[in-house]
Length: 421
Ligand code: UD1
Image 1 (cartoon, rainbow, N blue to C red):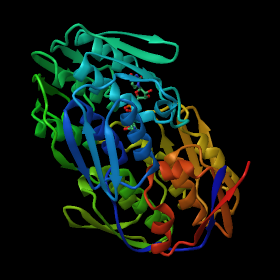
Image 2 (image 1 turned 180 degrees about the vertical axis):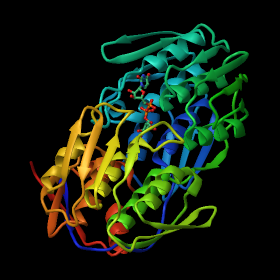
Image 3 (image 1 turned 90 degrees about the vertical axis):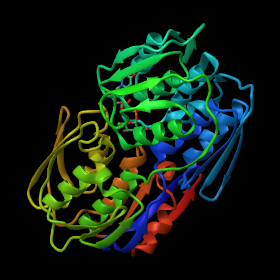
Image 4 (image 1 turned 60 degrees about the vertical axis):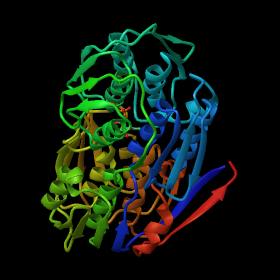
């Protein structure tokens, strides 16, 4: 079964949109619930398919999980399994984050190598090396990561690149190790701070989250708590790009504008008027055709790789020549081929994309290859001359809650269709 969206071009996004919790935070917070016996409650959870996929992984490990509206409740028993090898695991890229939680809690784990986005090679070497530093032996076995430790002991570890996932794996395992750990060149993404905040509320001793050096003093056990997930900065910024591309007028709430700082600066550079209305509220207006942008993806606080498709889609309808450079994932330019189907004047050279903007794109049938590329194609379709079909939209639904409803509430014209393939 394949699902498509049919999207009408020539519309202008206008109105107010409230953004819910961050996908890249909530999935890790759910994994952390494995580390404490009892009931962990997460609020402000987004209504996305990946939450059910993660719930299936946790159930496999012995937890009871209930998803009710924006509240996810996880009951973790005293004894949990540490083998996450089912198909459910391979469905979900973020399932790798149970690795650190399981090793911390049980001293071992067997986790099937995840599937997920088609955006390039996603090795786990830094995750494994972090666990090795803490005293675990790790190896790959028929597509599964196997980790075993007699005892976890605090250690110093320097990442060769500030990987989000490897930072999370190390912090989770170190939280229940004996003694002090120091992680340097750590990722600084807001989701890392959110994860460390939950762990701290549960009793972990962590300082430096949000900086390049995170110190963790291990504790013997953690207690379950309630926690509100931070707003999704990628979803918030996606709508901001939509406002600028369609020359619209949007108020976006629920996300800290500082978490979107570089993206918003790029949009200002393209001619947007952006006003910060409050700690979680911005207003974005674009009057004229946007101007070309130059941007390169970098770890936070740089321009996020997850917004690279939006940058290319914006460039395709902007005045002049833009250059977008991808520094994080090697295969993330498949999106450009789809934009070319829509008449974009774009070409890639290694990890650079050069785009000469046009006033309007051509409607076309295009394919979403991952969550963010899918959202970028819908934004592009809203700037085309007729109705476009965006295929394989299950990707979009993995990461954007109530996507169709949201587009419609802002004035977009979109409908979903299913077909048997
Ligand atoms: C997370 C996000 C993803 C985002 C990315 C970068 C989740 C579920 N996903 O992915 O949406 O695009 O951060 O902001 O939170 N690498 C290695 N070895 C490792 C680990 C990573 O070489 O052991 C490389 C990757 O191949 C990639 C780079 O490091 O080139 C960054 O990856 P990383 O920051 O780990 O991304 P994820 O945690 O997978």
